[in-house]
Length: 137
Image (cartoon, rainbow, N blue to C red):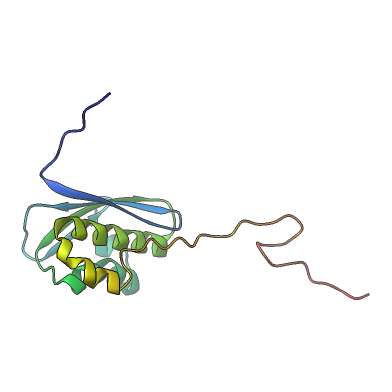
């Protein structure tokens, strides 16, 4: 049995949405401004659309975090699911750092794992619920 060593360099958290899983590390170092690295790229390069970038930054804006460094490894899902998984992971990591942020994050629904996933296709149907067109004659 391996003994897990405590690492004081970062605070880890996991965020999930649909099929996307984001492993978030909030680093202890304090840079000037917000520094977010997603899969070895800057978050603005990884998420090129403003809508996705805003989803990633939402927990930081709500809690007033100005100087923070975050490293994220993400896999699975599409761009929207990934950005929301990152948002969930950042929220959970911030909560581990400061428990007083719970009220702010919970009010916006950022601590709740959105469990909605794609419904499976059923036999005899075109999609999950879409039936073939019915003809009377």
